[in-house]
Length: 281
Image 1 (cartoon, helix red, strand yellow):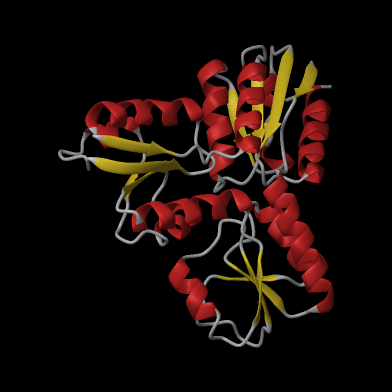
Image 2: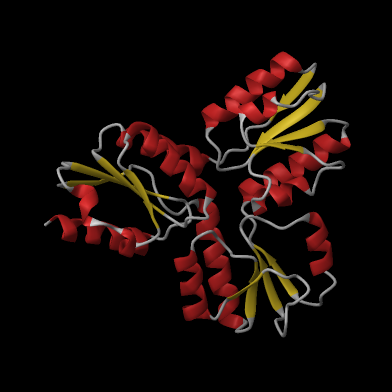
């Protein structure tokens, strides 16, 4: 069986940047912690803790003895940032620039009198951080259907997307808003790496007999890759590491496509590919 990697996969710019920042800070500050998981990949989080002693803390009011706090790639709320500034710790902001962009857009547009609409998951840390920059509570929609269910759509809106959403779903939402609002300001906040990884996964899944998507199961961008693969290849599977691989998936298959989320390190991808090759021999 042939194993083919997608043309684009794995670590994006924002993740590489955050890991590099974290490793550099932790070398000089042994008691470093990140406010929330730095990225959505438990294996890489474990590596940072084992190799550099970087701990994860969700509670901003329980920083312990740490004097160095790193803000996760997904960002934190505006309110939590202000609280963090009062804690007497050294703050390093590893928020992805593709996340700070919608934060700034939301603040500027809401201050200009626009109602904010966000295409995304309201419970995702990135979306929560972006929401906090709006003057009044924004409207967060998970799909076109959830938008259609709203009885009264604001007449003057600014619309953005969670950075990891599918562009075709976003354009459907924009089209509906244009038809149902008086003024619509649209900002494409889907990051380039997300778009490239999704297109590469879509292309490969149309040719593969089985697709393996590698990444953290809480990772939004990884789940989007999985959904795309499923649309074109019914035998698609989401795995966090090589231990999730089952030999039965490959019986009678000729071609296996492999893609990976933007927070998946190369060493995990390699281990998965090696295990696939081993079980089909």
